[in-house]
Length: 235
Image (cartoon, rainbow, N blue to C red; front, side):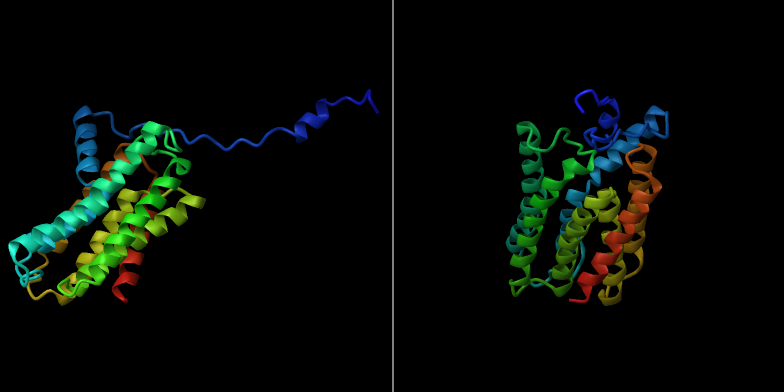
């Protein structure tokens, strides 16, 4: 028994290694197109979309927050920006600098996204829970914040099994919200929805051109974002 060749046994006892997710090469080689794609990806980063929509509803839309004075409007916006923008970004930055599960600030792999997703979920849940208990917040704003929270939850759950584009999730959530909002908005003219669809097209195309995601990851993310925002609108 001691003379048994163990080389065959090594074939069955090799340690299992997870495949390394390598970044895809950019689809485009034109430096100007790559630059614009990076700009669109950065300006319309998913962590900022909630703040953009809140700013639009508070300061741009003529009647969404008509009952609040300017001071209250600014306070509401800062609350959303701080809770869904600054705190998540700062948390990811700390995780990256401490080397706690995040090797790159871009979080290209599924493993790197697990802890940041969980942290972001807490912040999004908190701001939704606060706003839904305020008497001066319109119902459609509460629906949107709930949809944003559910979008992060859905992306986190999908990330366990396969990678999805969080940019596409945010864009899908934005487009569905604008579609549903147009049915209850007395000032709806199709302009807001058209701008949202244009933004979604630019951002999703940019992610594809940069090689950050596959077609499947973009389509899946966009569908998930639309679905959870629709579900949130029902509550």
